[in-house]
Length: 120
Image (cartoon, rainbow, N blue to C red; front, side):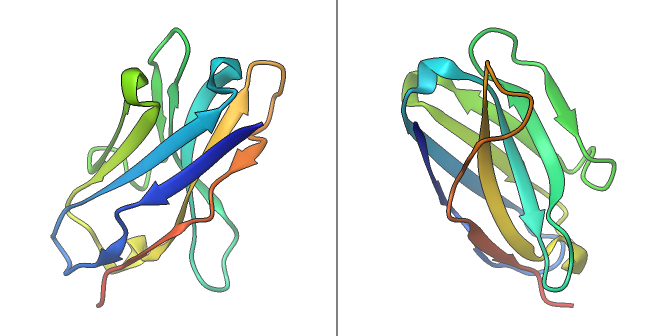
């Protein structure tokens, strides 16, 4: 099992920046990819960004956040970050951290989520 705890959400103004953190614990050696997803009210949960964990640090981003958000990791702290810049009202959502283990094709482990609100 892998446990994930997000932090760093809050209420910010359009154009501001915010950094989310996700601390992982448990069987982190089994993790292959860490990711961030988000879900706005009435919408499906959507992919935001991902980064390789044990090994490659290759990153991927949703088109909607490319160039504004940066995902990074600190293996020594078992923590993944999402630096969000130039925030827009449409970025408002609950942001979830997720982990994919090396023996799975999907993200199996999820955090409880952290709210990000950007008023229009």
